[in-house]
Amino acid sequence: MPHRLLVPSLLFTAALSLPGLAACSQGAGAPGRTSQAAETTGESPTAGNGADGGDDAKSGTASAKEAEADLKGKVIAIDPGHNGGNAVHPEKINRQVPDGRGGTKACNTTGTSTNSDYPEADFTWAVAKKLEQSLTDAGAEVVLSRKDNTGVGPCVDERGTFADDADVLVSIHANGSESSSVKGFHIIVADPGEDEKTEKASGDLAKSVGSSMGEEFTPNKAYGKDAISRRPDLAGLNNASVPAVIVECGEMRNPSEAKLMESKSGQRKYADALFDGVVDWF
Ligand SMILES: [Zn+2]
Image (cartoon, rainbow, N blue to C red):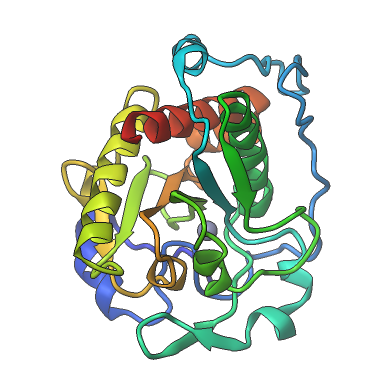
């Protein structure tokens, strides 16, 4: 089971001690998910009026920031967590790969899903593509860890190393606490980082992204007042050589956050908040 994240008050210490406990990066498949859902989002930034009834327009805040943002010369790595084909290829994603700290861990996991079986991989892909567009519009070069939402992997080690030539890495995930009352985003950085300088830069990035996310979404303060968690066990972060964060955008089992995550308008808000956080960090 992915995302077996306990009650918030127990979370921090438990996360470091219980096997299988995860920031949606470990564990077996999402329950009941036997096939990938189709990619349902239109990726054109001008596409509007999704089936959710919301529109796909960028929020006012991000539009303003995007208009003034100049990311020319910046290379930004985006890692949309998991992959749409992971669930049907356990033999591929369960193989062991370097965890970046001298050990090994499973190549990848399926991730979690909402109670209506909307998969985390679909959510992260939709947000990543919207974020990619905004960053590209602002002049940045964007590299993605995966090319579609129908394949398998890549493994968690490559989800760090693919960003070696980038300036920064943002890994997009969503959490799946069993309790539907758990709500809010949190951000994870490697502890320790690649080196002192990178570790500090990752911490600054986490604060910046947390601040922009906090303007639109609820921070889960079970992870601290800034909703930032420092962990030694996440291979993507451990294998990153550049400033890197994992953003757990929210809780997929929480009804109000699930609704946001399943809608194009909600996905746009997540992408806009991530965009603002990256721009502010630069
Ligand atoms: Zn995840």
